[in-house]
Image (cartoon, rainbow, N blue to C red; front, side):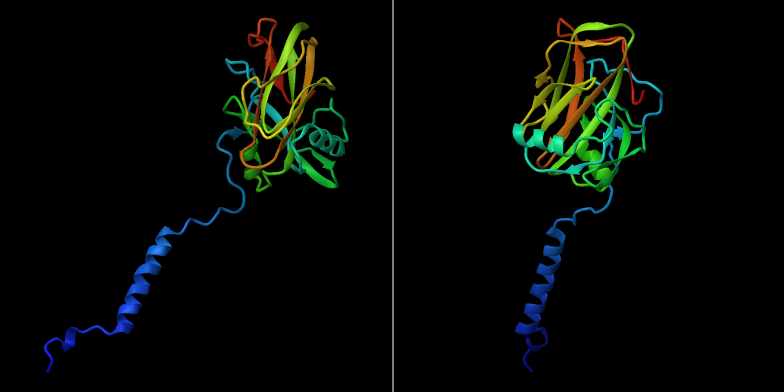
Length: 235
């Protein structure tokens, strides 16, 4: 008897072992499957108080956000056209309640009251938490600033990813366009007047692809954050 016969390995066995090892290795190296369904928004919460105040740097952290609307284009002409096409039927000065529905483009979309933990509101997290699209979409957002007195020479300073158009009390006051990152005070309005009482800020934020968010604050005549006002989400 060949002394080595019991230890010999046939080519078929070698091949089977090789395939088993490599299959296990490839399985270990394969990327995890992309998650499906809603993913909780760690930066966003539902408001738990009737009113809020801006954070120490002046950023507004309480907003009403409408579920995303499919659109396409980030140039000024494209964004302006999409905003006109998907205008809110109730207009720019009506503040919805949490859970209200608005029909835009033939779809019934829901408004969500949100507080953000950060200076900016992460629309990517918002849409993903509802299993909604995050790319090639338009988000309508609104909030109400309650001023104890009339304030002159106030400017609305904003940033967004990507394009956005902003209104104060129904008047368009600023717009920024193109595929851009959110930068604090990327766009600043002309000098405005806050009325005593309620002032409605409305914006349309349009995203092309990837992350999307926005930030906004009010600056005084010396470019310091405005203080002394409160924020709520309906009249």
